[in-house]
Length: 194
Image (tube, rainbow, N blue to C red; front, side, top):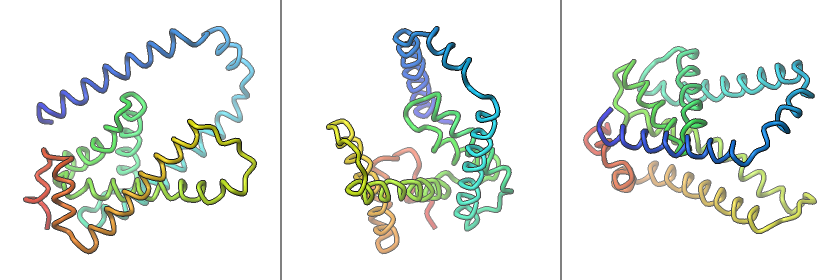
């Protein structure tokens, strides 16, 4: 990794540590212990299995997107996805998405610029659920508070921008590369696109 990425990951890790410290300083640990003592381990095991299975299905979807550039076994893409998710939980800047592309580059020789679009499209598929939630809101008895409205608005914005970039990439590849180059200057997208 270059120096810039190391700095970003280090700063992200520090922010994560500070957030964990603030969380544990304001959460009564004895209440959490009492809560976890009432948890049924069978339900935890079932929920964990479903959670891991969902990520395996997502990694299969990502594998299909990657198959245009590189053939990777499904279990390896699942491992890369799980490692990226672990990093996302530890560092609150979604660095895990970039790290997934780094794994493919490091282990399979594919430039990050060739695999990062697959990660972006994969995450865009995840935002389709946001569209379903927005469509269902008028039919649900949910009390809309301002924080919830702001959150849903931001999620809708992410969905619209993601779909907009995919449509733009389908029709105007060079313009899309120019836009992404502004946000990812270290990836040399223009020189690596095919």
